[in-house]
Image: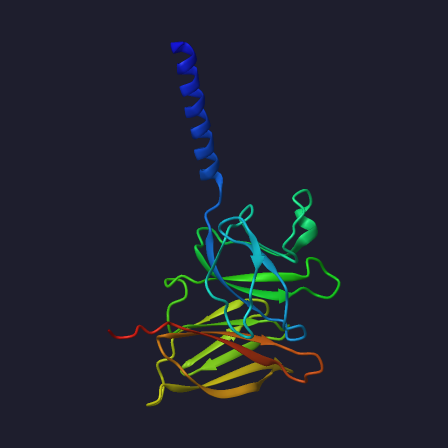
Length: 237
């Protein structure tokens, strides 16, 4: 009887260790905030896996970041689907987009973009490290989606932005009494720099911006979509 009891205890312990090992193998959830950039089709019905394992809608906001969401990476990649009912035997059939996550990233800003016509999956994604160390308050990022060389002038900074790359713009300190500074975008044509956007923006340490440089069908010049991320302000008590 004691032998049977001992074997039962070992079996329970073994099962517990097995479950614990499986839990350790599961990827830790990653916090993301996403924005859809698709001027031609600005609305998309996409889904992600939340930290409980459920496939739920990704509720985009027009030209804005979503609320903070938690998703579980799949083999080190962030994955989006085009439907909630995924065939477990063929999940690739529902794949809408995927991107390999940078090592050790815990928080990310995800830019969802349409793939070129005829390519699959239908969308592609870019990930920006959203940690305070990697993207401090007051800084900006520029994502250039056109083939021509572009550049930004923001206050005292003049920064070239390479096609398909995400470029850092340091905090702007050369501002007026209203914290405003001239912010211009240029593209290179025939050896000359041509301004296509000129405006004044307010630069504060509590505010970060993502500038997306792109073209729309029928346009004769590039344009800039601006995503503003403002740190929440605590209410005095």
